[in-house]
Image (cartoon, rainbow, N blue to C red):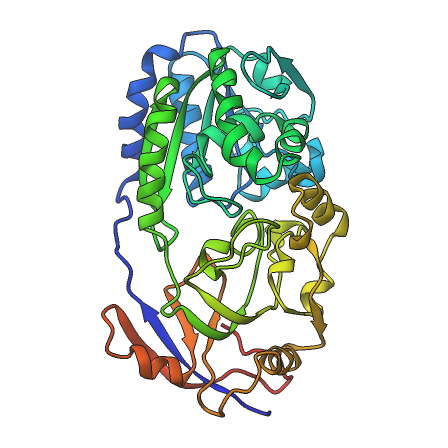
Length: 413
């Protein structure tokens, strides 16, 4: 196969991003005024996800604290990410522009934890030592459907308080219980952590289908359990999606930790690959190709097991130590298994298409996306275009685009 042609389309999602993020943050932070006392040391807990405008938001929160004559500093709140090392976690933050030079406050990265009173928690409870020794903690995180499970509390402030601030020790403890640990134990442990009184509040962020900030909400600690499910529902309703559910072959140009906690968002592709967890009844994809790993993943290719075929280019970027460390902590080992490795894009395409079984020529249902975070501009086969051309929010941009270049690689996205 020397050529294969696709149609480039634009999906029009709801445009509801914030016009002035600084003003919104300033307005929201007012509710935390009484919690910041002059002379106190305030830890800003920041995670490892590729959150839009993260550096700007962290900088504004730090400035707000300084204006109260208090002293902010940053702690990584990302469980075992960064190979479960202080340097690795500091490096992840630096990749997002979260550095002392850029934000104007110190970054204190350590894997050392303090064990808290266990209270009613069924397992030991831990907290980052630097954060614990502060006078108060403010969590900064995005509220979003999780990649491993569905529950009342998924990715957000409650989970960050437990697994993020608890570092590798708490992450390993929770993940050792599998999905039960995530759905049932996290709320119980969070309740005990919040009762200690160290966490003053949190900045909850919600993004829209364009990966833009659409909502900023400052929450007092006593509102976490009540308000986070409301924000999660908003986030779920504003996620992007593929234009159809029945797909033969999905080509993903890049995966990475800055795109999703599992590199490829299971909420988009409909694959979970967790023992005991039901796969999606909605999205059905016969084969998935992934061709590259983002630089901000630093070699962590967790989620590679969600694909069927990858390219040599991606394989050569994998840091197996980082990937396996993350997989071992999560306990979901299948997500770190290596798919078939193809020499180039053309070979990957032919291998993956062959695995789909008999497909009538010209009727293959193929979609190509940049990644699972950006689904506004994508490529689709003519057979899919024929089925959705009259659908609302679909715009054809360019027809008859060859999938391959002269070097048998996929043409630039």
